[in-house]
Image 1 (cartoon, rainbow, N blue to C red):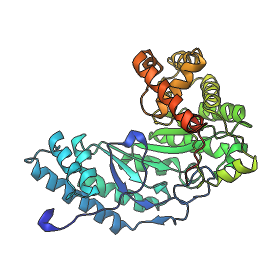
Image 2: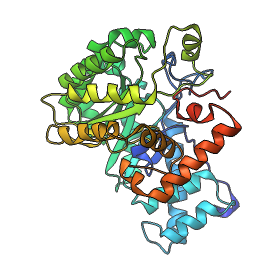
Image 3: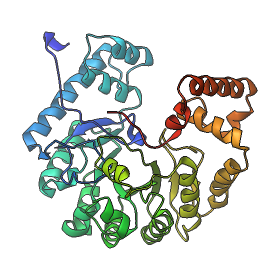
Image 4: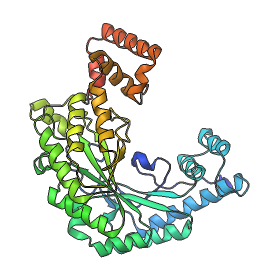
Length: 382
C-alpha cells in the first residue's frame, strides 16, 4: 500500500445490477424510511447523512488508491486486465483497492452514489459533494443514485433536479415497486400512486434519466391483476427511460413473512409471476421506455426491448415459455435458478437437459419437495 498504510473508504451494501462496474461512493448510510414489509436489508439500522467532510475525505482516499493503481500500471489511466485480476486475487489488497481497480479496468467513467436515498441530503450539500467528485475525477461521464419518490414529489422542484443534472447527476433509480395504492399501503411503502407519478414526471421534466423498478409478485395472488394494471397505468403517465423488472423474494427476516404465515398474503408461484408480467407489459401504451429484466432472480431474462416497437417481441418471450411442456418448464426453472440456463433456447442442449432432470430426481428422492422449495420465491433461510 502507499507508504505501508491501509487506505479505506466506506462502501455501502447494495447497488443496482446495471451499476456492477461503477465506482461506489457513499453519501448517506442505510434507508430513511426503512418500513417496507418486503425488505429486510436495512432493518435494525439507523439512517445517517454523512458530513460533507466525510464524503470529501472518502473521495480523496479513492483518488489516492486510483493514483497508486495508475502508478502500478505504468501511468495508464485504466488498469489492465492482468493488473485488475492481480489486485482482486491478492489478499494484501483490501476491498477498496479491488473496487477501484475493477472500476478503472472498465473505463472509470461511471459512479453510483450510495445508499438507499442520498437525495434526502440537503440539496446544497449534495451538490457540493457532487461537484467535488466531478472535479476530482473529471473523466466521469455518468453519476447515478437511488431516490425515494415521496421526497421528490414533496420536497424537490424540477428546478432542483435540473441543477443536480447540470452538476453531474445523470440517472435516478426509483423503487416504484407498484402503482396500486392498495398494494403500496399493504407493503408500507410510504408513498401513493399519485406521488409515484408526480416524482416520475418531475424527473423526466428535469432531463435526468429515470429507471423505475416494478416488483413482480408484490400484490401476491390476491391483488396480482390490480398490481399489474395499476402499475402499467402509472408507468404510462411517467414514460420512464427504463422499466426494470424485479422478482419478489421472501425470507423469514422480512416483516412480510408474518403476513404469509397468517394467510394474509398468498404467495404466487413462478408462473403466476409470468402471467402478471405479461399483463403489465400488455397494458403499457404510448411510451418509449426500455424494458429490462436484468436480475438473476427473474425467470425470463429475455424480457428485454424498447417500447413500443419491441412490445410484441417481449410478449412472445413469455408466450414461448408457456408453449413448453410441463417437464420442459420445470427443468428450465431449475436450470435458471441454478444459473445453468439464461434462455429457453438453452433447453435445446439435450445433454444439459438430461443432466438437470437427473439432478432434480436425485434431490427429490433424498429430500421430498426439495426441488419445489428451490423454485419457490419463498425462502426459509434464517
